[in-house]
Length: 482
Image (cartoon, rainbow, N blue to C red):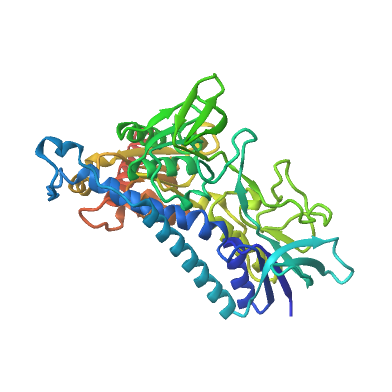
């Protein structure tokens, strides 16, 4: 029986464990925090639970009057316009943590039922491969013991932790990382968010919706510099319209606590003050002190594990998955990397990782979902594609729901009409991207997408309409050429 040792119990680790157990391997997962990893305990599940509350707040507060909803309370008529829905952040965070622990427990039960052994502790590789092809993994268990496991294959899935700036050290009370915000009992009155990537934008939007006055410090020209430019413009406009102070081209140099306030100093000398500061300036891989390089595993300058498309590292028999690889920091990608690693190591059929079929989502309001090739790929010549963008304000369902912001964008090959990418900016865009993902993954044409029935009225009708417009453009182009 093949012996598999997995170090790290996040999505890459526990999904790999399930696959390996199903394929008949003897599997041990070494984990220090709880199965599910940061995705379940401190990142995806908690943040999206918090955002779910913020989403309800935003939807109600921004559209109840337009939809004809009456709120019966004692607010004097002259103050009706200032009426807002409140939130009990302590209660919200208790629910967040309760759901995270419950999800981790469910994963643990699923893994153990599959016959996987779970060891609480920290693991590291001990030396290089032995003559019989096996490796030693040393585990420092939670109770202080040291155990040595023999493995025919090892998967490194240790994730990453929030990056900390030397002059902005978190204290867990006023200066926070995104793993510490769930310990707050009261809503920050004035929150400074440093970093306008996905994490910064999500938390900035969520706390703005919950009632905080938010300042978003962005070192770039716009928020979400890695996303579709049109989508980023929509989101930044929404942020500003809802009262957020978005400071573009502003780099934070330091953050310090001054009594019950936090002062953030920018590179140009300006100082901004808030009650709390959330640092969202990236992450660093958890690969230190694991004996990786001594075992022949090559790392990048940033400390990420180098892997190929079947999750192999440079060391025989050692695989890696998830955020510690820096490939694409999504739970879905980590899980796929872990599964691929086990298929490959155990000799099963395997399809190498294809990042151009990965769908991703930014959980802001509105959400931003993407799949396949992007506008940047088209502009730089990486992909020859035509594009259509349909604003949601023309969609009948959007009108009914009071949705004013957002669009559906499709990219297709000019000759064949094969759909190669798409962007959806809308409430629940994470659900609306799936048909476009199917089209990209299966090389469907715009004709095939357009001919599939959609419900009327529905937001997904804009996807079909976009495909029809691309079909007409393709037909007209062919007729012009002839």
